Image (tube, rainbow, N blue to C red; front, side):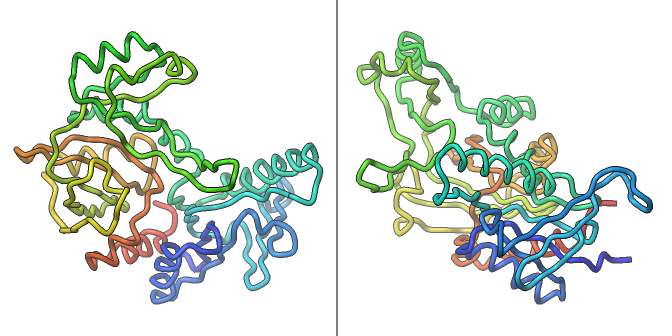
Length: 323
């Protein structure tokens, strides 16, 4: 019998990609409870009981309640972990705010991580594990995917030697993080070329990721949703196509079966139900694996190509926990 409970969508208020999935769930008659961890308080309440009370199983019992929705924890069929934000408690003194944030992360977050018989897309702790690029690279290589020569180092001599060995080398962040200047202007980090002469002692402060530049003619963004794979070729003259979306052209394509199976195996290794991969296409048509974003963006690709990605997410979430 199909699970009749709601899908919990955990995300920030302004998330158009989540809106697309919720619309598709509504079209299927699937109830939804949507909230953000920063709603905790008047807009979100949680009660969870643990321990073997009469009638209780090994999982938490209790409820989640928003101004418009109410569900038991056991009633949640799937959890879609999209773009949640955590409260900051600006009205509290900094020590009290840090304490309060920790209680929300470990109380609300910990309970959401422990829901019984739920399909997670994706489980937040598995997302966290899969976000580590060194681990991604090692898994991709073990699965037979072509990985560009890569160095992660804070040793200036090793970095200079790597650049001289490979000639054209790029640098990219090991993890994207929000960054603002003192005047509040937001900044970001693009994939950029780097030369040996540019490497100085400041490299020693933290590890950096350096990679031999792929002689590419296009990029691929591949979105895997359960067993369904959507691949989009992105044509541009940019090293990092994210730098100018207006300069991009999109074409849905099919992947070689071996690559498709390897990408699905990559997600399975981390216990993920979905993920977005970036690959580079060379002049000879070879595919070079670049990275996995376990919770990557895809909404604009559906708008540009018409691919039914939101529908695939809705179908997966509607199924509930795998049997």
